[in-house]
Amino acid sequence: MKTYTDPLGAACLDFLNGKKDAQIKVQSNIVEDDVLPVEYLFRSFDQMPDLEKKALTISTGKILDVGAGAGSHALYLQQSNKEAYANEISPAACEVMQKRGVKNILQQDFYQLPEDTKYDTILMLMNGIGIAGDTNNLKKFFDKVKSLLNPGGCLIIDSSDIRYLFEDDDGSLLINLNDDYYGEISYRMVYDDIKGNSFKWLFIDDELLKFYAEKNGLKMEKIADGMHYDYLAKLTVR
Image (cartoon, rainbow, N blue to C red; front, top):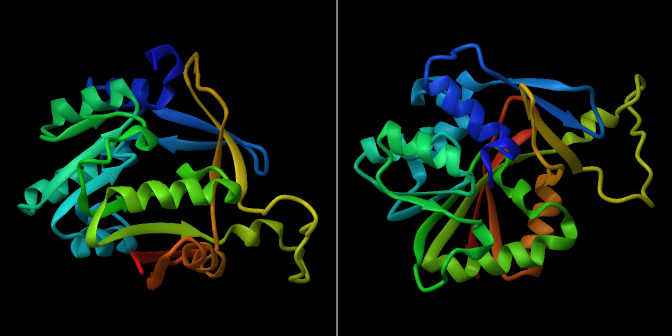
C-alpha cells in the first residue's frame, strides 16, 4: 500500500508532524460525506468512549490489536504492562506507531497473519468486525479468529446496529428485506488529494452477530451497551 493510496496513514503522519487540524473525508453509499478529525485517532485513554475503556480493561494475556491505526489502544495496553501486538496493514500508520513508541508492530493483512502464533485476546475496536466486509464473509472471518486464539482465548469487539439510519418519521423501517443486510456499507476515505480505494465494511446488530457466532462455533456474550446503538461483545470458542 503506497502513501498516495493510503489517506488514513498519510493523514496520521501529517498530524504527527504538526498538522493538528488534519481531517479525513469519509464517503459512503448510505449517508452524506462525513469528516473524521485525525486528532481522534490519537486520543488518550481518558478521551476514549466507555466501551473502548471497558474493552481495554478486560483484555488479558497476549493481546492482538487488529486495525491498530495510530496505535492509541496498543500504547495504553503497553502502559498498563500488558503484552500487546499492533496489527495494521498501512505502512504509514505503522511508521506513526513506531514513532509513538509502540513496541510490537505487525504490518500485515489480518487474514495473512501466521497461524503458528497464538493470542489470548484479539481486540477489534472502532467497529473492528467491519473487516469482515459483509455477512457472506463471516465464516472466513471467524475461521481466521479461531486459528489465532489460544485455548480459552477470546475475541473482543464493538459494533453498532445502524437500522436507525433507515427509520421513517413514524418509526417504521425503510428496509427492503430482499436486499443485502442493511449493515453492509461501502466506504472510501479521502485526505487532501489522496483517494483511497473503496472497501466494504460491516456493521452488525448483536442478535445477528450471536447467530453467526454460534453458527461458526463461538459463544457470544454482550458485555455492555453504548450510548448510540453500539455495544461491546466477547466471543469465545465453544
